[in-house]
Image (tube, one colour):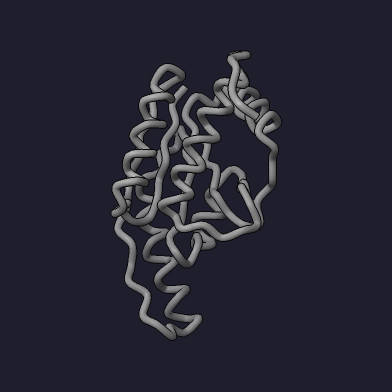
Length: 159
């Protein structure tokens, strides 16, 4: 199985970087993981809705340039489908058994994802109705991928 995480912005805090590295290491026994970052756009305070849309589109173009035709794309979006961990694991397994061997997860920047990215996605998933910094969301996603693989392989993992 191949997983790609396509995300806007870099992680600056060491504690997030350490957590990402830990989950990269843990996930390595279940498949290949790549993380690809695209630059974020600076959003001035008080930006208009039109400017915010332009920023989302610029970041979206960068994300779309990273997507390959062979990828099954899952956008992380507040309007996406919600799963519990077991159902998420089962869903990923069903994608694998149906021939989807490369799953790309997309994490937007502070303004979210452009409509063009959401339209390209094969599905959207919502991890929570709460808002998280995109750096933390990367850690949450990797933890859930690790948990999903542990569940899929009938290996113990805390609940």
